[in-house]
Image (cartoon, rainbow, N blue to C red; front, top):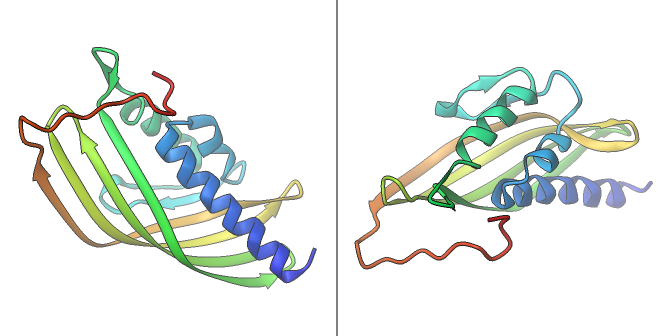
Amino acid sequence: MSALEKIEAIKSLKHRYLRACDAKDANTFRACFIERGAIMDYGRLGKYEDADPVVEIFRKVALKKESGSYVVLDMHHAFHPEITLIDDDHAEGKWTLAFRQLDMTARTETVSSMEYEDKYVVEDGEWKISYCRAVPLWSMTRPLGESVEVVQGWGLDT
């Protein structure tokens, strides 16, 4: 596999991770990380030394429903990737994240900018995330007015 193919495979992995976050797909989210020992540092959300505890939080928070609708809706857009290949099986990456979250219980919208710092390894022939750190740059939370209607259902398993 060429260097360019490796970089594209890593980009695809990160996009799969982001898409799983937004699609509320806990199984695909988990599959993006190494089997054991992934370091995940999500700042105020906590630091973990394996992906399984984060998946459980994901299931409790992202998959929570009230009256048949999700309580939290997320949108992760990562761009400006900088992927550095260390050797055939190790790489590092930096990404800029534009994050948007609707909290339907609190009736708020949060918009944030973050930087991801990642490490990747080949496990069982596939690139996986072994380290993921989200560094917050700024965040803004504002109320959703009473006239704001949020419609769910396109692409989400409702």
